[in-house]
Every structure is written in C-alpha cells, then in structure tokens.
Length: 64
Image (cartoon, rainbow, N blue to C red):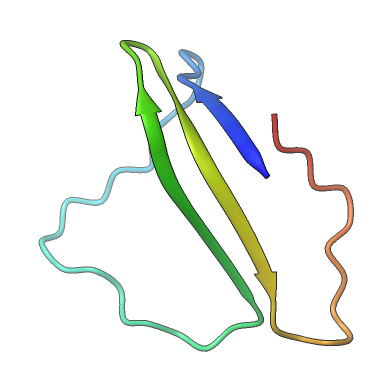
C-alpha cells in the first residue's frame, strides 16, 4: 500500500517541548512507514498497518 501525504495548513500542532520519547507500550496495532521520495510540499511513503489482536477490527480507515 502506498500513501501520499500533504501538509494541512489548518492543522493545529500539539507540540510538547521535551527531549525524551514516551516509553514503548504494548498494543495490538503497529503502523510503520518508509518515506520513498520527498518533494517541496509533500512526500510518498510505503505504509504498513499490522493488527496483532486477532479479534480486533480496523474499520473505516481512509488513507489518501
């Protein structure tokens, strides 16, 4: 699956100034992406979603 992302000028950033990352937590969903090509205002990425909970559902995902 591939995804193209563009900047949303109306988005409000939730910026927390901190030098540390949050600790890793256990969960049933893994989202990974690799940026394949960058442009001035967007980029192309290879996108992977893994569901580790057999009974969990991933409904209504819209990646555009």
